[in-house]
Length: 195
Length: 399
Image (tube, rainbow over all chains, first blue to last red):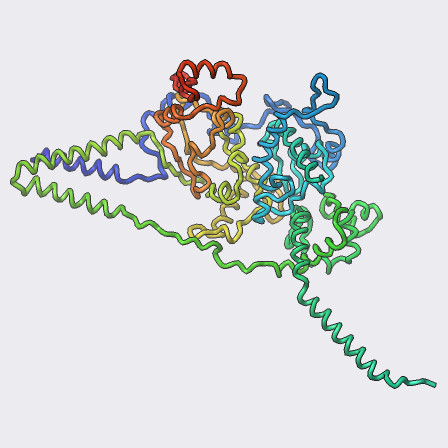
C-alpha cells in the first residue's frame, strides 16, 4: 500500500512540473556547459574579460584595415563633402571589349536595387521621390526628392558613408561595392524622376 | 472758391462704407487663413525643410515657429532661395545666424517659387490649425483577453487525484485498482516523454530584454526590412544584432512615439522611456541633439534567444542570400511580435524536414546546370530538393 502511495506522489510531482512552463526562462538544458555546446573561440557577441570594455567585438586596431574594407579618405566635414562631390568617382564603371563607353553592369545595377529596397526605401521611397513608408506615416519628415537635389555619384557615396543632416551613416550596413551599387541605382532613379 | 459737388457727401459715405467692408473682409480672411495654403505649406515644409527644421525647438537648424514675425519677408525669401549669396553680400543677420549654427550651411532652394515660400511661412505661423485632435489612445483595439484556462486543468487534476486516492484506500474493487494504476502509468509516461523531449528545446523562449524593442512597430507597422538592422545576414554566419548606431540612424530624429503607437498594454510614456534607454546607452542628448562628449557608452546586453550548440554549423548567408529563404520561414511572423520569441524548435528533425521538402531553384543558375541535370537524372525527378543536393549529409552541419 505504501509503494502505491509513493507512485501517486511521484506522478503528482511530474504532472505539476510539466504543467508550469515559464517562457522567460530556457527549458532544462543538458550538457550545455560542455565544449560540445559552447564554442571554444569567443562567439561574435559574447562578453570578453580580456578587453577593457568587456566586449568581443572590437574596433580594428588603429592604422589597420579590416579584411574586405576599403578605406575612405574624405573627412566628415563640409569641405570633405564638396571635395567628394567634385572628385570622387565610382570604381564600378567598366568597358566591355568592343564597347566604346563605360557602363555599369546589369548585375551591379540589380544588386543596387536590391540593396536600395532594403536600406533606403523606408525613407526615400521606391522611386526616390522622398515618399517612403516612414514619411507617409509622418515618422520621418523632410526627405527630399532626388529630382531637385544637386547630387553627383561622389556626393551620394559620401552621404552613405558619413550621413548628412538627419540621415545617419549607412557604412556599417553595406560593403564598399554595395554602396557604389546603391549610388548607381540612386542615379538611375534620379534620371527617371527628371524625365 | 471751393465748389462743392452735390454728390460728394453721398459718394464719400459710400466710399468709406466700402472701405470699412473691404477692411473687415480682409481682417476676416486674415483670421481664417487660407487653410489650403497652409496645407500646401506643410507639404513643402515636410518635403524640404523638416530634415533640418522643426516648428518648435531646434534640430540641425533653428525652430521656425512664427519666423515671419522675427524676420522680414524679403530677407526670408532671399535667405531661403540662396543663403550663400545672401551671406556673401555681407548681410549681417545672415552671417550671424550662420555662425550661431557652427557654420553648417543650409541647402539653397532656388527651385521654390515665391508662392511656395509664402505658403511655408504661412504654415510656420499657423501649423497648429492642422493638428488633428486625435482621439485619445489612438487605435482602440479591443483587447480580448483569453480567459485563462489553467485553473480548469488544475481542478481536473485534483479531482482525478482524489478519485485515485479513493480507489486505492477506500475501494475494495481490485479490478478498479489495476485500471487506475495503468491509467496513472500512461499519464505519467506521457508527461515524462514530453518532459524529456523538451530538454534543450527552447521553442517559445521569450526572455525579458534590457530594452523593450517591438518588432511589431518596426518591421510590422513601419515596414522596415529585416535586413536593414540585421545587415550581416546577407554575408555572414550570424544575422547580426544591430549596433546602436543603426538604431540612432532613425532615433536621432525620433525621440518619442506618436500617440497612435500606444496600445492598451503599453502607453506612450512607456515607449518613450524605452527610447530614452537607448539614449542612455549611447550617450545622446535629445535636447541638444548631439552626443554627450566624453560619455562612457554602456553596451546593451541583449539576451540571446536563438542558440544552436557548437556542434551544429549554421550559416545565415547560405539561407538568406543563396537560398532566398524568407526570414519568417524559420523565425515566424516576427513582424507581429511585440516581444520577440523563438518560433521554431531548432531541433535537427526540424532542419531535416525542411531540407527534404525545399526544392532548389535550378532554373536560373547556369553555373550549376550540369550537376543539377545529373542529380535530377540520378533521382529520377524534375526538381531537386536541398536534401538531394547534399543537405542531409551529416558532415554538412556536423564537422
